[in-house]
Image (tube, rainbow, N blue to C red; front, top):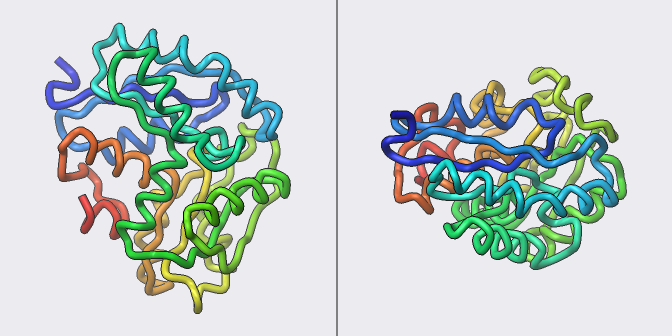
Length: 238
């Protein structure tokens, strides 16, 4: 039986092509990933809020697979309504599924704290209006964004097609001298192939929406290892 150790129920935007493969690559033996999709084509505030309307139904469907935890796998989708949005989503999904739930935005903040980081250099694929909401959310949790670099992409399938080498160059373009860590945002952006190289080259912790989300899910499940421990977060802080 798959998931003899734990089963993660993952709710992702319908256009996300990255989070599932990255989770499967990093998950430890005996941990399985089971997905449900909610509609999203463009990463705008309006579409992110509309996507959430179907999340409870998705959570109830995942519960029928007897998953152990529900994960709302969208960074900006879990912060677009401001501070506390992530916690409200998790509470709503937990009630719908009858089991624990977390959101990516929560994981991003908790990962920074685990790394001892309060000053963040931020790389994103987003348009400006979404970047602004993310910065406000991070700052509401005491995280100072010291620099940001973004790709200005709205269509989510285009985000999923960004090659890892472009993500590497985006992160390297940041001014990291005053940062404690680099955070690469978006669950649809390919990051796990380049995080270790970035950490070696920048000399600071680097984490992404996907490494943070899996890290927090595993911690909540009481599992203290990753199958592929990408970055210091998964190597040293599980």
